[in-house]
Length: 391
Ligand SMILES: *Cc1c(COP(=O)(O)O)cnc(C)c1O
Image (cartoon, rainbow, N blue to C red; front, side, top):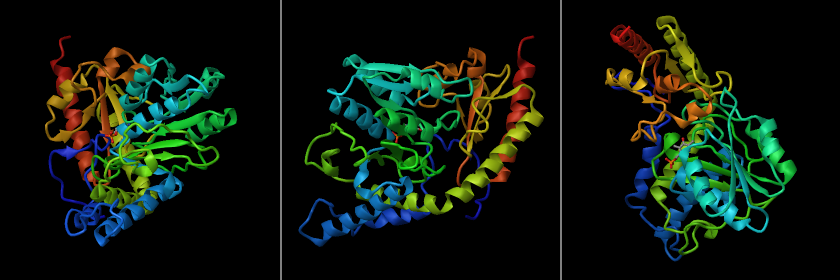
């Protein structure tokens, strides 16, 4: 794709959300206009046209996951998908067991529903990751009990970009007859995922991290080998095979499908380009600034992610002096509170290093010029802050 001329602020927060690809917008527009029908209307052309668009999108989302279209349930995004997966499975499997295992570095959209389940009487084990952010398969194996129903481990972390060994986790769960859910909000369309190869039973996906619109996502729910029992969390009308009722958001679904079709073609090339840009960014920061520490595994990481602490520099203070860069500190989602990121704390990094963490998210329209500009600005700002520090 042609590079855009550099504008400020430079957007380096692609983990928070992504701009909608113009090709996706193009695909959505007719469904706001002349093709406005409700896909549940079975008796006229307006309904048929809308249904056709939803069918195509469902096939495209399924294809990118290695799933079949019937296994895709459209939702409002990954938060809803995670809620449906966790609450829906635990509720439906009450007779089978009472125990759920997850990881301390999960997104709040997993951790908060597990807390809700705990209040309802379910037993939850939250595993601490290794210092590099990866789950220990040995510790996971030890945590599994005869009454364990579900393991939920994300595919890629939204702060440190660390990629969990989903295929190994899936194989372990399959061997023990335990269901495996993965939150793939950050990973889907960025790295290859395949629900068959990786033995994934439920997969949470969202369009807006994938150059699609906000407010649309999906939950993949395995239908065979094994069929996943799931209790609906939104009732009314029986849409989406009864798993999620409500009139479908046709324009958003059409756009979501287009975003997946684009990712299927462009993922490999884009990943290589972003990894090279990201490595260049890291090299420049390390050359320019003393005391640069990378948080999380460097090897097992999303191509567009970098998470760095600058020793003795508060990330919030740093970003305050950089209005021309759109970046996040440790935790964007809970930035209303002053708590340092729960992800970095779970890695065992100290309070100071957690407060010094800056998250870089590179994406489809990030250019080398932007990366160089950002590196230069951050180097200067970090040196300024250090010079001001009381000795
Ligand atoms: C963004 C994100 C979510 C939430 O997705 P929404 O579609 O915004 O609800 C959940 N999990 C992870 C890992 C995310 O990055």
